Length: 53
Image 1: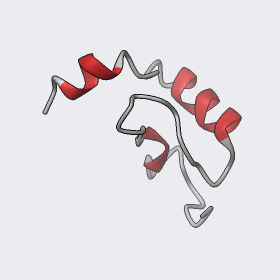
Image 2: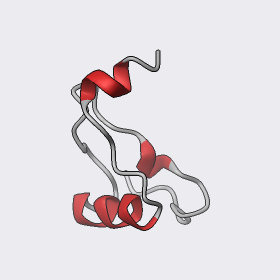
Image 3: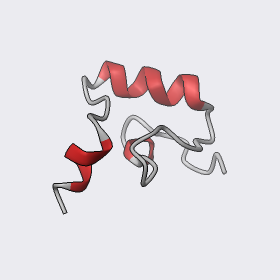
């Protein structure tokens, strides 16, 4: 919804879909991808993510 004015500080962009794919982000998916790349935090496979829980 774009309500987060400081996504680099308040990391709502780190939320990924249940299937491991990038999903909705108020700033757009290219910005979400850029932020995750900047943080070197692009998601690994869905199976690896789900194994964390």
